[in-house]
Image 1: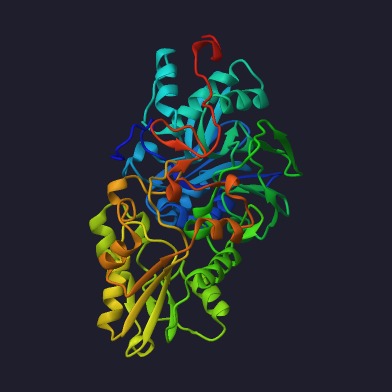
Image 2: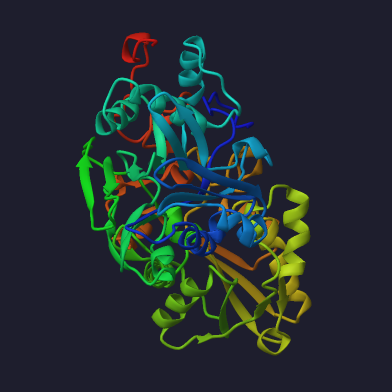
Amino acid sequence: MDTGRTFDAGGPTEKCGVVGVSFAERGAALPLYYSLYALQHRGQESAGIVTHDGFQQHGHVERGLVGDAFSQEDLDALNGSAGIGHVRYPTSGGLDRSCAQPFSVSFKSGSLGLSHNGNLVNADELREELENLGHAFTSDGDTEVIAHDLARNLLEEDLIRAVKRTMGRVHGSYSLTIMHDETVLGVRDPEGNRPLCIGKLEDGYVLASESAAIDTLDGELVRDVRPGELVVLHEDGEGFDSHRLVDRENTAHCFFEHVYFARPDSVIDGTLVYEARRELGRRLWEESSVDTDVVMPVPDSGRAFASGYAEASEGVEFAEGLMKNRYVGRTFIMPTQDERERAVRLKLNPIKSTVEGRTVTLIDDSIVRGTTSNQLVALLREAGAEEVHMRIGAPQIVAPCYMGIDMASREELIAADRSTEEIREEIGADSLAYLSVDAVADALGEVREDLCLGCVTGEYPYDIEGEASDREVERPSISESSLPADD
């Protein structure tokens, strides 16, 4: 990761979708499989499920999409009424199978499975401490660090105290689904950076990164897991216990979940993502409207922004001007730049009757590298657009994300060292405007202090070495005295 700054990245980062279920009698494998399908947009590189039948743990983890990773035979072998699942996309770690999840380990106090969405900023430091105490690691991912630390704590503590002890040692972003023997639990970091919610099913409960997974199981969203909270699902499927283990004054909700990453039909931190995007579009009109014949979205994530923008305009036509090929994956999370560039023209084709001879406002959720925007403007001009004005439903992305989105290098970020006018020239648009940070906070119903805005301000809610912080934060101390003694 070439950011120009020092960062204790801890190897491959885990930007993913997690799920956990617990039933009284029903098998967990198929509901987990369906849930991972609902979270497929959060990761395309690997999928995995771990279950427990009351006697032993069963697991299957494989590279590829959910539908390719599991056969009927694989699902039939995943016995038990409790389990966790994971879909992953790689950032700095690349396509490393050793970092596919859930991560499983058996130890003196039982078996442990762990699925992680997020990224620790002190993983290397923790790994070194644990290696010095005899722990052997099979990957360089931070998920295994959490698993080893928790397993070690479980040798001396009960489940609740062990989780609290681990939370006191890890620093960064994490939403976890964990299975200790047949007990399923969920943990959200004290700042609530990555989403995690609780759902009630007819015969059990589910934990998931997004409520869309709960909907897929015909369940009811109960609420979000609170920042710093541990939720333990009852093994009889009748309820859950809540333990608020860490309480912080401010949260650090990732605004980019609402802007891009999450499904529009998901509810995150009490807000429906689709409505949040429409409100961001309305604010975009208020801040930077331009008089054109038609407003059109970049599908799919730009659609709700464009809808809100057109509604606020009270007269500008909303129309689809780009047709999406749905058999091409998300260009943003494809591992290499060449693949991203190639995928743009495979993925999107202009509708000439909407574009030809007209002035166009093109709405997108964000500009990260600028590659897609440049090619889309060119496509619309080739289709006969007289003018192309770009409006972006997020502020300029000027700095890396250390917490869960693939924006690893300042060199890759078009806005890191360019003005808005320079970016406009680079992508070939007639005009370009972004949404302000304050408008994002207002649209999401949050105060700035409760959002993680590091990628658009360069100031982070975590104590990251070499980076500025937007608040008073202090990394947990790590010393041998904080670890249980060797058995």
